[in-house]
Amino acid sequence: MSRETCISGQSACRRVRVIFSDKTGRVKGFYLRRLIRRAVECSLQHENFPGDAEVSVTFCDNEYIRGLNREYRGKDSATDVLSFPLYEADELSDAGKYGPVELGDIVISLERAGEQAEPLGHSLYREAAFLAVHSVLHLLGYDHEKGEAEEEDMCRRQREIMESLNSVIKVK
Image 1 (tube, rainbow, N blue to C red):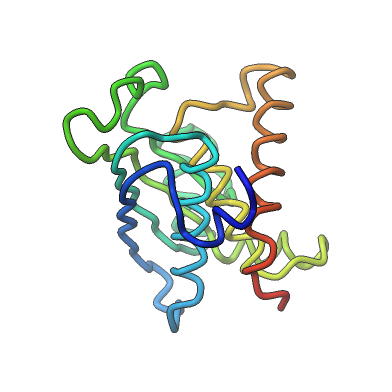
Image 2: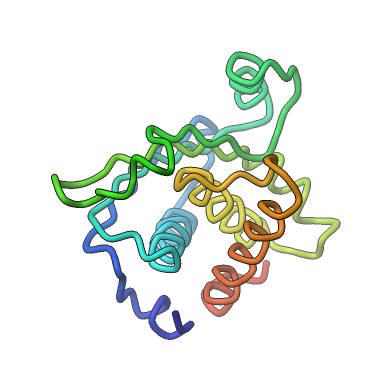
């Protein structure tokens, strides 16, 4: 996949619908939503996802994501992003044959993303895009927690996708 292909919006998948929810009440304007949509599209394109797709993205704060992390993962702490895939990786092999595929839900703590971005010298936008890419890969069945080889593979994919997005991300 070339950077130009991803940036131009050409995609291996036909259509991507991203449904946004803002639990913070602070997401203003359209830039962040457009960027996250582009991150989802580029991730699916990079992975040659064959069909139409739908993904839900919720922006929240640390308190909200901490509650989800406690409830679903048994970890009583805030985290940056949670992914809730609707399918196992092997169930996606027939994706697109029967209509749009609802891949699952992504929950991004913008508060945590901001905390992580600053020491890395990234903008909040870049960090949120990275978290979306990371989460889409989880929705597609990748899991860095399964071992070193899987972690290296997922990190490589994230790097490649982010390289294709870097020219459209606001620096600050």
